[in-house]
Amino acid sequence: MKKKDIKSITLNELKEEVKHLGEPKYRAAQLFGLLYKKGIEDFRNMLNLPVSFRDLLQENYYISKVDLIKSAKSKDQTEKYLFKLEDENLIESVVIFSDKRVTECISSQIGCKYNCLFCESGKKGFIRNLTVSEIINQVLFVRKKMNSNPNNIVFMGIGEPLDNYDNVVKAICILNSKDAFNVGVRKITISTCGIIPAIKRLQERDWQIELSVSLHAPENKLRSYLMPINNLYPLPDLIEVCRNYADKTNRQITFEYILIKGVNDSPNYADKLAKLIGGFNSKVNLITFNPAPDSLLQAPAAPQVKYFKNKLIAKGIPTTIRISKGDDISAACGQLKSLHLK
Ligand code: SF4
Image 1 (cartoon, rainbow, N blue to C red):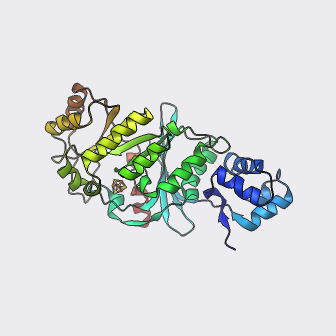
Image 2: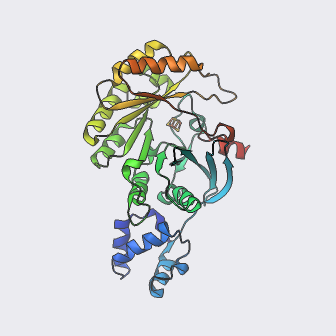
Image 3: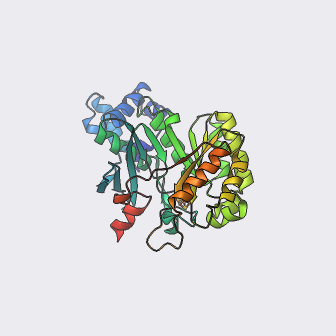
């Protein structure tokens, strides 16, 4: 019989499995504590469980982990980790320190299907979804290293998290569980290119999870050029779904907008953007495009970025400019992996 990956099981599922093995349900919470609070990686070392139960666990389950193969630390303290998975695929996580808060940016897939024009990860194609445990193990690694949880967890690494909906939701259940990581769902952000059916499903969970939507253009044609997913889920429909999400969850939606010189950075686009997203609880996070060495796209000059921001603010849209972290260690999504493979 194939052993099950115990870190891919939520607490409720584990309660049922433990019961099935003839043990009381409370053993599941105990096991969660040993796996995630204590970080024990071998059932035989779970000494406060009965020997017979440890033997059953050993027979039926395994404890997965990720292998760190490379790390880098930036001058601004940003840390980046490159992990090898059991099938030799590589994933990355980034840990960002600011104002005494620690944010971990985690990956949800190996590669990505969506091929956005400005994204290096998207150009390399899609390999597979990460399992629940592969998502969880990125956080567990950092928790063990820092001896505490990151304050915030953002699904903003490689991959589109809502394209791996079931595993991402299960991972959030484990991260949120008080017997495991106890991270509040309000401290977890899902960043999406706009998979409408999945946003609706997420809203139905009534979780108040932070949603960050990559917009990058205020009109349909330009967005389809930058983000082919827009052909499937067009901008007007996406904005409508975001409006509902903000209303139902009472959470502010963040719209990410990468400013690309001569493509989407004219003042006219700031006006259109303000008109598009005005009137509901949202804010804009402007990101100056960070071109790869062979990119045909360019970054706008700093005054242009500031002008775009001020235009939005003048129209009543809360707007920030994202400060780039970890530039000296290739902290953008996919860069450490690319360097390693080269
Ligand atoms: S920006 Fe996000 S959705 Fe688009 S290709 Fe990159 S990882 Fe995929």
